[in-house]
Length: 217
Length: 169
Image (cartoon, rainbow over all chains, first blue to last red; front, side, top):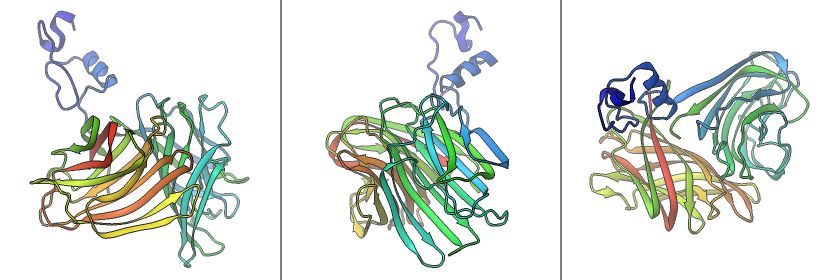
C-alpha cells in the first residue's frame, strides 16, 4: 500500500498496537504489524516446535527457540521413557546456538515426594544442569514421566536466565509414584539461544517434547 | 482443558513502590496467567501480591498462603499465614539489575463475586552473594467479592517493573 495511504489513511497514520488496530490492512501490513507485535491476534501461547522422539535419543536439542521474540518460554514433556531405570531428564542452556552447551555454574533447588511417603529437598550452587527436571523414569511404555517448565529472560543479555518446573512419573522400582518441582538459574547475563534435554547420567529417551513461546512477555 | 493464553494487558512503572494492573479481570475468563520478569528494585526484598476490589488495593488481613521457600544454598523453609495483608513471598527480587526474576502466577475466579480468589505461583530469583532463591505456593483472598486487578508491592521502590496478564482460554 502506498505510503500516502497507509492503513487507508491519508496524512497522519493511526498508531497501531495490540487491541487497537485501526484502518484497512493489506497482507503486507498485517505481516509487518505481526512482526512488530502490533497486530491483534488472540492465542499468545505459540507453538515453536514439537519433537516426537520415537527412537531412544540421548540429547534432545531445541536450537531455534526464537528468544528474540519471546521473553517467557514454556516446554512440556509427555510419555517420556528411558532406556535405563531410574534416570532423570535434565536441562542445559547454550549461548552459541547449540554448538556447545554450558555444563557448569547452574544453581537449583527442588523438592521431591513419593507416593510411599518419602519427601526431601535437593539443591546445588554448582551444578552441571538446571536441576532434575523429571522424576525418575522407567523403560516401560506404560510407566512414563510427564513434566513442564517455564523459562524466563532467555533472550535478555542483561538478565540471568531462570526456570521453574514440575514433573510426575511412575517407575517400576522403589516407591513407584514420584513428583518433583523446583527452580533454577543460569546466573550469567547472556543470551540463551538453545535448550538441551538430556539425562542426569548415561541414558536415552523417547517421548513428545513441545516448546512454546508466550508472546508479549 | 486450557488451550491457549490470550494477552489482556501489560503495566509498567518506574520509581514506584507498587504497581497496579487495573481492570485486567473480567467475566471473559475464569483463570489468568501473570508473568513478571522485568523487575529492578532499589533494595533487595520479596515481591508481594495484593488484589484490587471496588475500593482499590486491599491491604487488609484477608490473605492466606502456604508455600515452600527453596534455596540452592541453605535449608528449605515452609512459609504460611491465615491473616496476611498480602500474598507475601511470591518471589525474591535482587537489587542487582542483572539478576532479574522469573515469576509465574495463576489466578482463579477473581471476577466471580460469589467466590474467593485463589492463586498458585512459582518463581526463581537470585539472592546476590548467596544463590538461587525460589518459591512455590498457594494462596487465597478469603473474601467473596469481585476482584478486578492485582497489585505488586514491596517496601522499597521499584526502579523498573513490568507485569503481563493473560486470560487462560
